[in-house]
Image 1: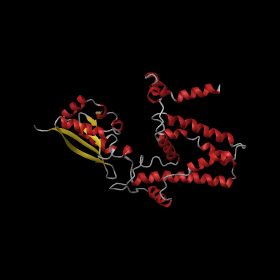
Image 2 (image 1 turned 180 degrees about the vertical axis):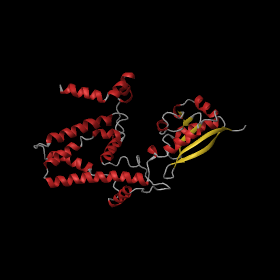
Image 3 (image 1 turned 30 degrees about the vertical axis):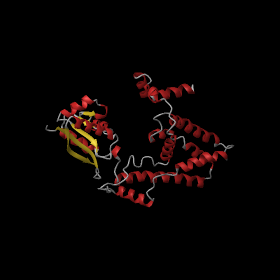
Image 4 (image 1 turned 90 degrees about the vertical axis):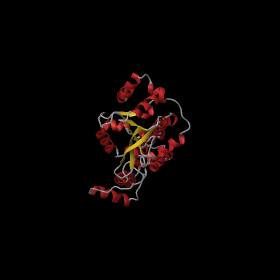
Length: 314
């Protein structure tokens, strides 16, 4: 009976994935279910960084403040920056150290009530993470590793339950305090440095500029922003993606002077070859790139280039 209830709950939670794989027979299995043995060290490093809370620095938040560093506008933002300075700008918590200590304590707690919950947490984490290690494309991002939560906390809780009140309270305070300090550091970095390129706040001014421009087509010459433009405009912008276009389609887009092209600014591209291929096609067809504007983020960093092409006089 328990297995039946668990199976039904599992299917209900995975219903969108089940429907997708019925509509496209076993697409998930056919696309992802093959072994990968070369990225174990990288995935282990990501596991460490995710458990320590440092994985999103430089990905969610920008590393540098840019030409116009952000400034606090409210008392709580000033308080966050002050707390960041007082705590030494922490970028990792104490979770990994305490989790490893809890796992090692099994050697001394084998004959205590803590044995079963510690084993349960360790086995569940291993059974969840090892398939990520061996599966191509899995375990390479923090949103994959986070699936271990909260099972790595079970051994910690089991050990703390055996400790006297004061030592247990001190460890809990250490864990909570270190996590709060790292969370506050993310907020402080967002205030001063702003978000990183994948989450850039230049998306809003880009969407407004493209909407006012009213082009026939908007060709994204890089990955990472077309979906956001569709979302912000509720599908109102005529977005096309150069990365999946054929050479005849690119040539047709170049011939129409009412088409607009958008790419990340130099140095920020996710797929630099896409803009390079577009520019090569333009040169072959004797078109010249004509810059329209560069969209900056709120920190003054050039983020998006908006341009079009004009036919060179022969």
